[in-house]
Image (cartoon, rainbow over all chains, first blue to last red; front, side, top):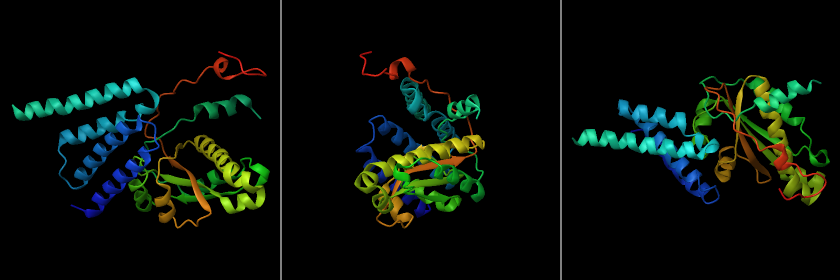
Length: 94
Length: 177
């Protein structure tokens, strides 16, 4: 794995931690969701992302910005996101 | 001057965070900076500096230190205040207050001009200032006030509602609403 990509992620996570000390609370979930998207991007670039991950990334990137305009919609989006992963987990385990 | 056209630009501008891969050329970025330079400034100090970027590989470095930046945009403008110039021209108030306000007004001009050119833009404060100063080799007296990201919009976000005028206007004195 390209070490630079890991440094990209480390820089992002640590910068987020610093910014979140002064950011509005709703930015916490937003930054975490961004981390999820960035992890998938790294996997994609490394050729190890599967179709489910790529779909998840699209879903995240399409919907995450509603955090700014509609908190209720953001909540629904997060619920759906976790549900998608839960359904996948249940299928994988069955 | 056509008021309706101006209002269409003001009302049509949205914060765009997702862009196509198209790079914004240097000439266009210079046009936008010129629009920024025509903003008003306290004491006409013009205590601003614009660090412009359109190299995708180099912009990628900022993804590490800008939580507000989700992807590499087509171009970026860091609107900075020059605290030394602000102090020389407008004293302590200029350095500590007005320079930031002036940078904000320049930023708005840039974003409106971008919209008029068919570009999307978004202003970000979510970047690490220390890292930005290091990466751009900024001297102590130059403060990055905001980052404006630019690009060809990938999608058009919904228009968020605005608070009604009746809620925000107070005639001549504070009115309990």
